[in-house]
Image 1 (cartoon, one colour):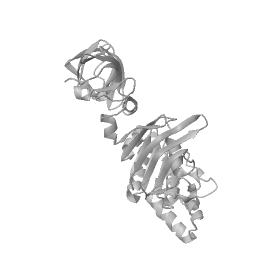
Image 2 (tube, rainbow, N blue to C red):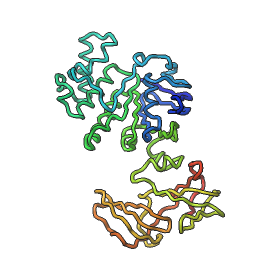
Image 3 (cartoon, helix red, strand yellow):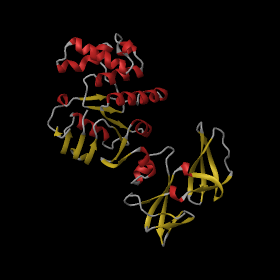
Image 4 (cartoon, rainbow, N blue to C red):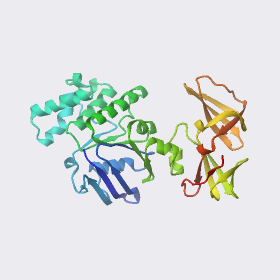
Length: 352
């Protein structure tokens, strides 16, 4: 296990910056997710931690020691890739034991370790099979066992579940989390899937355009997003966002005018999550224009004085139909305000 630090780390290719001045500390034994859209720099960051890429500037530090110039094979890092990357001509046993060849571990000890870790990830009955004889979930477990058998200081997971079906992803999320807790290995998960990040990790780092937008718990990111990007990226269905103009202690959004507490002026964005809106006789009149049953809940889109707005109601059966008139209300404390130019969240809020 290890404490990991990135100190002012930057990665630049010819004509393009992939990662811009990241400062990050990951505690010993923590499980951290790096979350963001494609091209945000999260995989580049992971490959710098692994030693596959070298940073253009800044320091990568393991347990207080700078490792910028340490070769990948000498960092004792385990990696699980999206593609699993198993050797097709080797058995499960041989695949798991493969990393120990470079550590000069005796055959008997290597096999003992392989069986131990295979039992932990529940594939000990598959030792003599080859990858082609395994399901996707079994291959994923072999890849995880291979990464863990050398007892790494740091485990890196690069989109490890994206090739699995929905049911298997659910199972593997729980399994990876269980193994990580049992071994207490410092783990970094790179993913674009917010459900993976929020269900598996203790802490989440949201990246965008090569920069860290915010880090914190899933609750922090959901309830108190620091930027407009985080507010829009976290949450499903996504947050309702409305362009507005703040002036004279009020915000004008489309046909609505809402009083403000605190100072704000100029172009702003009002954010209200679909689950924060509910039907209330004392609410603002709106008209339903789309109904989307989602199993345990129904997602509606309505035309309102704020503009088009999405709201959710629990239950499998829709209680409103296209064209129905409804009245929608939200608690002032649930509304978020952002500066439109900078994207930063404002201290001002809608008056109760």
